Amino acid sequence: AEHPEHGARPDTAVPMDVPVQILRASGLAKADFSFTGKGASDPFCEVRWNGDIVHKTKVIDNNLDPEWEEEKFSVGVSPHDTAAEMLITVWDSDGPLIKGDFLGQVAIAGSALLEPPEETITYQLEPKEGLSAKKLKLVQGTLTVKFPPRPDPDLADDTTALTGSVVGDADGLGAEDPASAAAAASAAAVYGDDGEQEPEKPKGENLEFEDPDKPIAGEALGPPDPDFEVASYTPLSSYTEEEALMEETVAWASAQGNDEIPPDIKHVDDGVMHFLTRAGVILAEAVDFLNKEATLKALLQDSTAQYSHHIYQQAAMVLLRTMPRIRSVDVWQLLTYIESATDMTEENALKLGLDYESMSKAKTHMALRSVTSCDEAEVVNERTITLVEGRLPWPEHAVDELNRKWSSNFSPPPPRVAGRPGEPWEPSFKKAFQISTGQWVIPFHDAGLRDNLKGRRHALVLHGDPRFPWDSEHDLEWVQDKVSIALEEQLHRLREAEEIETRRAYKVEQEFKKKQLAEIKAAMAAEKEANSKRFGMGKFRKSKKR
Picture 1 (cartoon, rainbow, N blue to C red):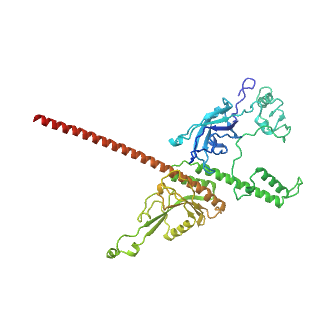
Picture 2: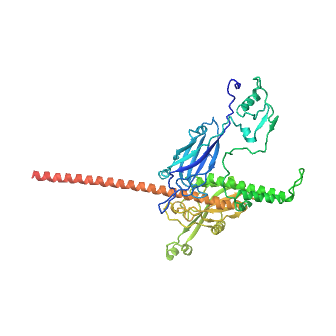
Picture 3: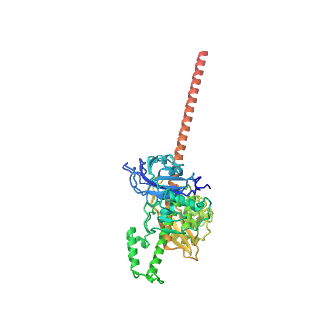
């Protein structure tokens, strides 16, 4: 390192907090369909810094030119981090659990954030990779972002900004002149007055705070508190405003003991202890709720999986990360095949020595199997139903008992019009039921592509350690009301995409056949015309010879 008098001091490469504010978007596409022709969008912005979500704006309903107020946040940018990137994505919201359609994105390099060319910049929304032609039509419009002025780092040291002004000697965290004295004191702490490097002194020695309790002026930067709904089973649900919650909590705590507490108190009465315990429970429930919601959104609700097996794996990962006591997660399918009655006459059956009475009645065959890694749409009959891949060797009476429990705790949603994408989606009715100690079944619905899974039922199966109480009512409600519904919705989107692709492939095939038929007809007509000309020329030559 160079001496301060002859060169710059060593670069610490400390990340700099860069404030950013999303102002507005203009000219967005209409993502929501309307029979009146006046469709709109419900836009919101999602900000990622180096791949991590750092901020989300609120949703503005029915607006193609939304304006956001107080949507401020900051990112820590290092001068040496050349690969850093801030990605702002505009989405159309379809509800609290559904992100909706992609409306465009803006990518801003980290180096551009350190020295933005202007304070307010309007960017053109760009598409992302892998969009279909239909999705590309929804990418249009602009996004305006503001970069508020930052305080000069040479005029405000980080430590002073956090702890208040400090005066002292060679430790030099602050001085009368913040610009020059801080730099000189910092250099003196390392090199000394004579230019020779001195050993580092213990931090905090000979420091004197002017007023450590004085509030620090300025605006706090960083992502805002997350917006979330408090679970209905927690005491926090009684308060929707933070101020009301704080007032009630203070009033309750004040009523638990004397207003004047001796400084040498060594006993906590039962009321205060109850309050502290309950506060810890509330905090734990709130943290658990946030963790579950964030995990569900990141792994399943934002899924772009193209196969049902991948969606099953993502749902299982959500459960394993949010319910630590679970040992494993499986997906079961209950197959039902009805064997029709025979059309053989009783006389012929008796001649062949067959049991006509049993043959004249339809028979129901059932089998239970795991479909996490096999073809769930495999065609079965009375011979192959007991040999399907992934079959679980349950006895017949156990499968019958499972079928009865399954039927009483599940009913599918109203049938959709076959082969018509865009139909309203509704979740099924479901209720978790236990089949053994530490084993719970949560049904869900998947009709497949063009009802090729009709008559087959699916369920998430949670296997927990029977030695520990892991299957609480709140956890089962979380799986039943959140995870299984998100799973059904992702499967619905997958089947809808498969239907669209099937229709497209069918249309291409029909156009190809039509073109091929036209070419064949044209060739036959040309051949017929050539034959007629040759036939006419032959007649002319014969008449001429005569």
